[in-house]
Image 1 (cartoon, helix red, strand yellow):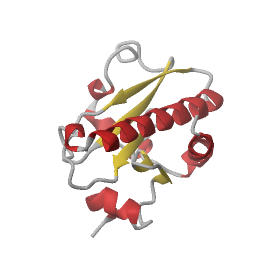
Image 2 (spheres, one colour; image 1 turned 30 degrees about the vertical axis):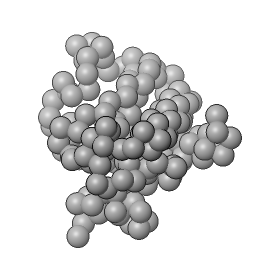
Image 3 (cartoon, one colour; image 1 turned 90 degrees about the vertical axis):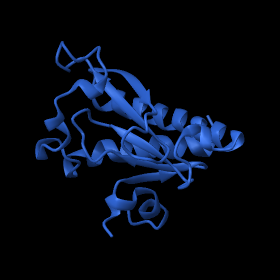
Length: 158
């Protein structure tokens, strides 16, 4: 089985190459696509939960806390790597993948004028499959920064 077919299980087994760090409630991963550099996802550890409401309240609150920590880490790293960093967008959708996950999208001033203030999902679908936007070695520095920021936040509970 390819790791993409079992993102959570492959992260738990240490086989998911996008894994940034484990959090108390999930697995922080960098996105397969990076048309907005720093795009990350927090996968819930609970493979049975199909929606946020499926998690028991204590687990749900921990998961949302972990989303906050990952968003903070992504924001700090992106701000250091690109002065055009603008803000973070956080989305929990679940329309395509039937497992609990949150999308963390850094947004930038250099985005096209018609998209910078719109949802990321309005970008042309080609952005998701264009090899020019695929996660690769050119993202290693940003990826390391996100991991370092998240590791610090997890250690300090900030």
